Amino acid sequence: MGDPVLIGIRFALYAILMLIAGLAAFPLYALTRSERLEPQPMAALWRAERSLCAAGLLLSALGMGVLAASMQGVDLLSLEFQPFWDLVRETHVGMAWIYRSAALLLALAVAICVTRWPTTAAAILAAAGSVAVATLVWSGHAGATEGAAGTVHRASDILHLIAAAIWIGAIGAFLLLLSPRVIRESPNGLRIAARSLEQFSLVGTICVLVIAATGLINSQMIVGAENLGRSLGSPYGQLLLAKLALFGLMLALAAANRWRLTPALAAAVAGVDSESADPDQTLAAMRKSLVIEASAALAILALVAWFGTLEPFVGTDPV
Image (cartoon, rainbow, N blue to C red; front, side, top):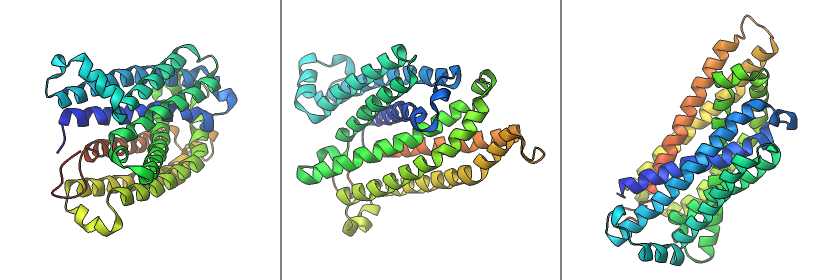
């Protein structure tokens, strides 16, 4: 059923790396040039990015150490350097770790030193974060697929993860924008939040389409339509069903945000129909919806971290 420690590290890495890429991409498509120069909310975004990059580096190193110790059959404190270095040099997982570490070091440096040029900083951070997210593919089923099929599988999985990162990063960004601190410290904070929520609708639709299309490709590569019934009898298939149910919940919440709460917030900010558009009530409803959506996203990542260590059929050994 997989090592709980490795599964926990995988989950944390998925969440952290997706937030690094998604939060950095957010101002590039959701904020105007002048809004990126606002002291808030950009200061909150840079603080989050610095913390996430540092945590990502530490967790990635810990994950590689735990994996190497598991393969050597020793505890982490007894890990020997030469076998560890051989694992890094001679395996795809090890090379992916090197690229991930380099991308995270670049992202951390940018989040510390380049924030005075927010557009450039966000673009570099988004690119570095996307590279870091892409390296996770080599620790799952796609990394074990060989030949041309493996290339297609990995490309599809990378697109799947990056689209998910943009969506998850947007949820995190909206929670930052709508936080009491940012709204209190930024005179334009509520207006920026309302406008960026509307701006996200097209990007969010594209993310959903990419996630759905690449999810179908990945499922065909791993399970195959002809083996679907057989897979549903395994822990892998059951966890996949749970993931799909949570994805459906996220879609329902996103639709409610787009068609009900976002127009209500825009009306409240504009002062239209002030008796029915109460900013505090609308903000509370939006925050609640976003927290539930974020919780569903984290649950999906936990499931992915888990079933990524399982084989899709009963009677086979875990990877």
